[in-house]
Image 1 (cartoon, rainbow, N blue to C red):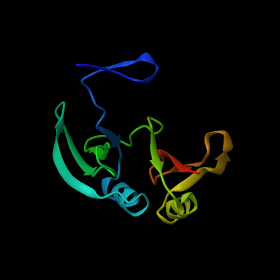
Image 2: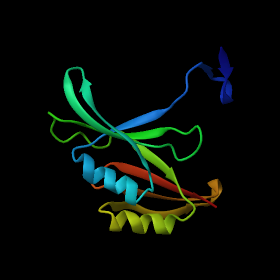
Image 3: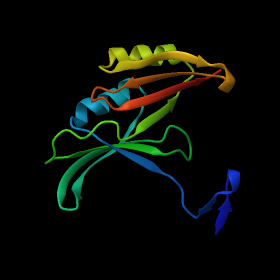
Image 4: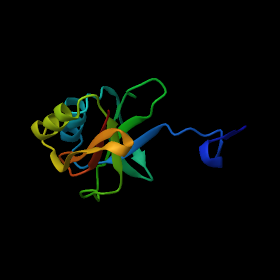
Length: 139
């Protein structure tokens, strides 16, 4: 089955369902996403990928049908490279979210600004390991 998507693109019976973020300190980073972003832990899993031991924590989707976030650490690896992706969050109170980031061990990299032509406010912040989050408040 092929679904026609906006702008003429097609999708062949495939749905995006999750992202995995490579982290060094699984517990500290999980605490940030729980305390700052309000994510709820769904499960923990220890296994291997390509013969390398891993531990991961998966958080529940934040809305029905939404994708989930999994934090993953390779137990034999040094610090993962930062900047490999940007996680996107939406919130009804951007000021409060940014305050929680700072209280939760993260930092603001680009302060809140209004983008009037898109009817939104946006800020860029980092989690305690330096992974970038784009946080948007629709106006």
